[in-house]
Image (cartoon, rainbow over all chains, first blue to last red; front, side, top):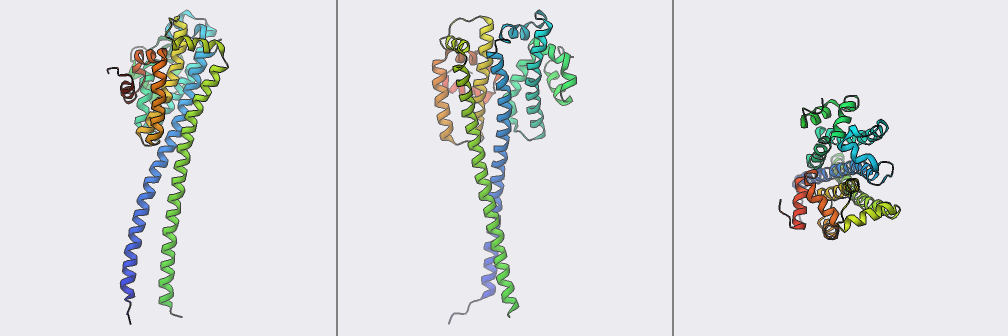
Length: 159
Length: 154
């Protein structure tokens, strides 16, 4: 007759159970990380979509096309009404960049993603039309951290 | 009633229950991750569908885009409009490329997108020229990937 040492069986069972819990927790952590990444991607997709909608509007709207290039390159050559229309595009465009900047700063979007938009921000703020918009409106609209970030790109032309 | 024996079995059962619960949670999270990845991929495809519908429904812009594809000479205003559109197109590819780099989409899915990008850059002279002229608008990782497709030097 075999005598079972239940104490030993119990001890082995506890060890196996502890290992199983550790493995499962590790797996859970990896899944959570991937899930976070997926959520970041979804958030990023929303930013890209907002910027994309503005790009498409700029490219295709017959009311914008005739003056938009002038608004960007030589804003003093357009009418006040045209400038106001341009500002309606510039505001959400910088708004999307502001959101991306702050999300990256707070760690909810990977710096990897922000690096894709920083060159675009630099490009926009190098243009006279966006500089004029910035001088006229930025302080009333954007977060101080984003204002400081953008103005550091072009310290002489924006204040 | 052997209380010690009963207690041991109850402890075992509760431990199994905890492990099963965690495994179920992990499975659900994995399913959620897959669903979110698919949603991101679907959104990416939807953005291209939106562009195709836009082009199909706007003959004037379709004509401009067609002249851009052929690399025809454009006015400054026309080129400006196309640059806005091209920025949008390449930003979408930049996004999906980042998803690949961060393992948010699998390699096979990225391979298909890269093939498509290679094809588009091959026939759309305007898009290719836009990228060559405006590289600084895009990230270094994306530009490196583009250089591997076009053979351009950094």
